[in-house]
Image (tube, rainbow, N blue to C red; front, side):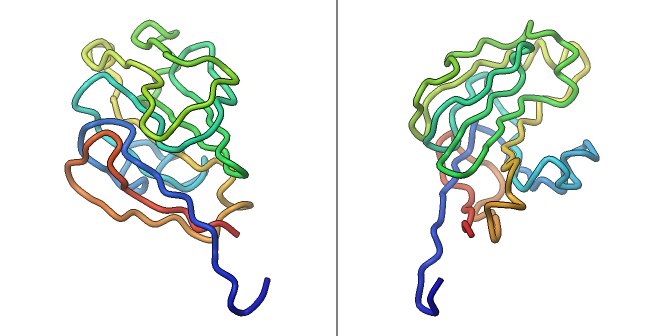
Length: 159
């Protein structure tokens, strides 16, 4: 890489309407520590979850609580709720299937936030760059507070 080369960047958007939360403030040590990768979270105010990046749906969990998206070299995981794997998919309706191509802001899932809360689980929805250590120089949030689904909230600078 030359002295004047420009770093590639990938922009991320809010996966839902709601309150943007830095990953370090998420009330789960595994996510907050960055063990699952760099990223951010939103406390959704409604049920619709959209793709935070353009890419290809690379994985759908049988419990419907998480969706993987391949965005170039980056592996992005949208993880809906905390400990929601225990709910066996009941409050989720995935709107995509493995191999689908999605644009930024494409609806990918509905999470019944009332049902998740009724089950005693947090609705915090994380967007994680699961291979950020290998593929990114940095991830920076550019927003805070209330966000609108599809609003730019951060940028990953790629290696």
